[in-house]
Length: 92
Image 1 (cartoon, rainbow, N blue to C red):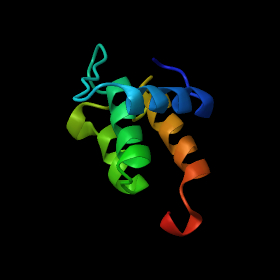
Image 2 (image 1 turned 180 degrees about the vertical axis):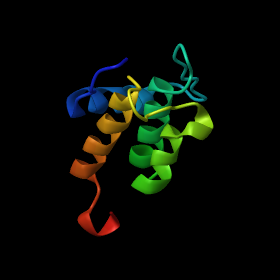
Image 3 (image 1 turned 90 degrees about the horizontal axis):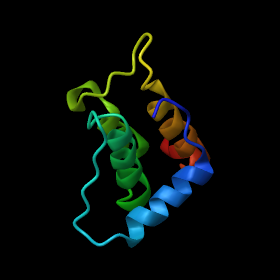
Image 4 (image 1 turned 45 degrees about the vertical axis):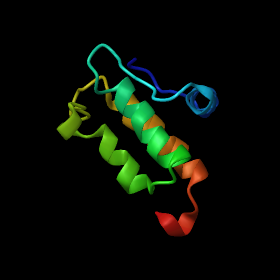
C-alpha cells in the first residue's frame, strides 16, 4: 500500500487485531511496510508502548525504507498522524 491510511481505517484494523485469535501472523508482500505499520500500531495501541518505541517497527532494521522517493513513506505518515491524535501531549 502506498497511500495514507486514515484513522478510521486504522481503528478498523486495530479492532481486527484485538479480536483475532492469537498468535497472529501479519505479513505483506515485502514484509516491511504494511506489516511494520500493523506492528507499530499493535505496540502503541494494544501493548501501550510509547510512540517512539512503537515507531521503531517502521525502521530500516526491519526493511522499511521511508527516505527520499520511497513510496512506503505513507505507512510512517499514517502511523504518526494516528499517534498525534491518540498520544498525550506530554508523552511526545
